[in-house]
Image (cartoon, rainbow, N blue to C red; front, side, top):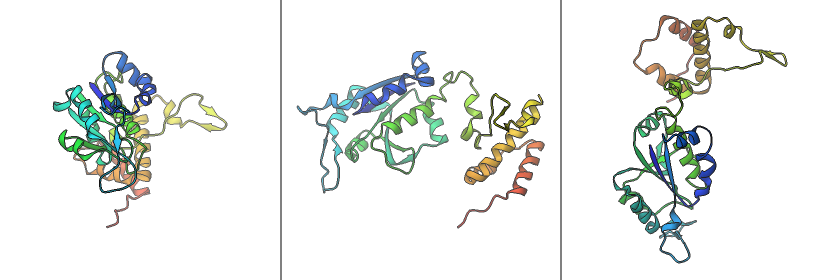
Length: 253
């Protein structure tokens, strides 16, 4: 996958693009990230890229000229283009999976109070949000999007099925996990994890994931239960036990 990032603060991406899984994906050629400084395309002699909003209001607005020229320089017309925006579509599992299938993405990181609407309209940009809160700029949100999408690119994680067992991707929150030592300051690891019975271990993990999801994200559990699939008998029994002990309350109207 090739990702073009348009930003006023390119140095913010350096620690992310060269580290950990993303860094290895770039090094191996699975992912190519090209970071472009929008300021390099402004025609203003003072390198200005923003101006005051028409109609008044606080803050400054990113001007169309440098962004238009930056987009033209990478031939963005026929590529999927995203603008990180708190008013956009929420970045969820479905959208992440959809984006991971693209060969090329263009991501615009806004700053100040926003961008001139003509940029979004003329270039048919999709607005995407990572949550109902405001950041000082789109760079951090862009990093979140890239990290989540890159993990689904074949071979990035090494284990093709690794992401399917992780937290949200399974439909449930992640089960409890432990590592050595077996006992630490009087705290012990559940015995089931040492008995060598992989079926019992999987069922214990299933129950742990169910309980965490029920208590912390009942909305996810409702969605999981509404999906059309058949659970094995032993998983159904555990599901019934968990719901008998901690009923899933109906959402308030």
